[in-house]
Amino acid sequence: MNLIFVGVQGSGKGTQAKLISNELGLAHISTGDLLRDAKGELRKRVDSYIEKGNLVPDALILEILKERLNKKEGDNGIILDGFPRNLEQARALDKIMEVDKVIEIKISDKEALKRLSGRWNCRKCGIAYNIFTSPKPKKDRICDICDSPLYQREDDKPFPIKKRLKIYHKETEPILEHYKDKVVSVDGERAIEEIKEEILKILENAN
Image (cartoon, rainbow, N blue to C red; front, side, top):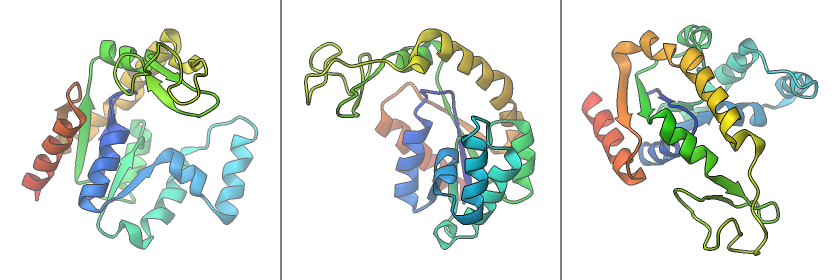
């Protein structure tokens, strides 16, 4: 079974993708992991873009993905997390992989803004907290482990978040129409375990 997990930033799609991957023995593949794990000549080509501050082109990402699909770990199926991001990528993906289901984790922009703007990090320990959801620091904006002040990344501030949400609605949402007969939407504004159980039921009924 080959799945795509889709949702705005902060929807929890990455968390659910990992949980479902573990439950069903599917390979969890994110675009970031693909690029980080590239080896040999592909690694050199990826670095040639990244080192210049450029985006890695779709064609190269697809080439790396195709190589990953040929590995044994994907025999039981895969979960794609963060790819495809637009219609062009979806159409290219269709040429190398059959998609069985697209799981959309739905949350409102208001909820996404709240979740993302609540993220604060410890520079010393590297631990991520969330002042609105969890894990919350015991002391306001202070690390539980080392008592260091927490900081907020620039891209977790309201203006960059709103910009990313606009990009998602404009570029990524159209892939839901592209895969319309395979899309199942799940309410992402609930407990993690509750969402996971619903997705598992959906996939069980799909077989």
